[in-house]
Every structure is written in structure tokens, then in C-alpha cells.
Image (cartoon, rainbow, N blue to C red):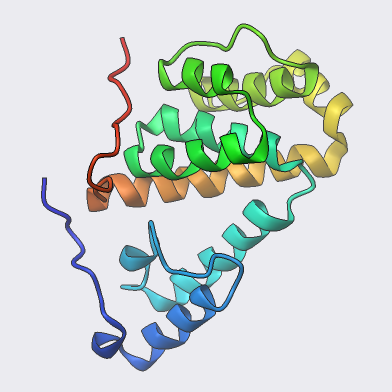
Length: 185
């Protein structure tokens, strides 16, 4: 499939796009990969979104492996190929178990999770499947992460839902040789 938003080079950008682009690449991402090429079509939105993304990815109260676990649940829910490609590697580098990553890629509940991993998985999975969370699921997340952690979990879920939608609509390609997510059964 062909991408819907052709790559913008800095020389093609408007002043507003260039300002948003500069803010993205000068931050902790060090580049404007993934959804940002598409987002730059609306530079004010791109700037606001990238600031939220910077918080939920780099400054969340959730430890990096758990934050990446939440991102993987979102990516799998949306079958967001590029999001999965990028964050499955980041999750492993952050210390998330390869067996957890593999189970989620297959659309299965990981069998061996610590209590904090289980709380993240159940919260995010339930939120995406039912558009809410039960009292029991909320209580588990609250006990593990406190109110700020629950809100950060909601933030990462919402942000990466937006990112997944943008990537899917753009038809953002995987790099040459990258293995796509398998279809869900």
C-alpha cells in the first residue's frame, strides 16, 4: 500500500511546520519519525501532540517497561504495524520479557506476569475492549500505581491510540525486512 502523506522535507515546510518540526527533533526523540510526518500537516496539532507524547514516553510516573507494555497493548489492539515495530524493540530494551511481547503480538494474554505487569495489561486491555474499566481492574491499577499512575496509564493509552490511528490512516510502512504483526484470530 502507498503512504497517504508523502514525506515532507524541511525545505518544503511552511514556517509553522518548520517550527513544529524543530521542536520535535530538538527534544528527546531526536527525530520526527512515525506519526509526525502526517501530523505536520497541522503544525499546531503536531506541536501539542508531540509535547503530550514527550511526557507519556519520557516522563511518565510509570517505569519504562510498564509504559512500553501499555504501548504494546494499544499497538496490538489497533494492529498498528509501525507502532508495534518501534515499541516492541523499545520494550525489550527497557527490560520487558520477550515472552510477554510475543504473547501480546499473538493477541494472547501473557501467562507469566508480575503483579504490576498484570495490572497494566488488564487495565489497558479492558479499557480498549470495553471502553471502560471495572472497579476490580481500577483497584488493582490504583494499588500498584496510585492516582497519578492511573492517570499516566490513561494518558499513554490515549496518546498511543491517536498515534496508532494516524499511522494506520497514513499506511506508514515498516522498514525493509521488518516482520509484521500476525493477523488476530
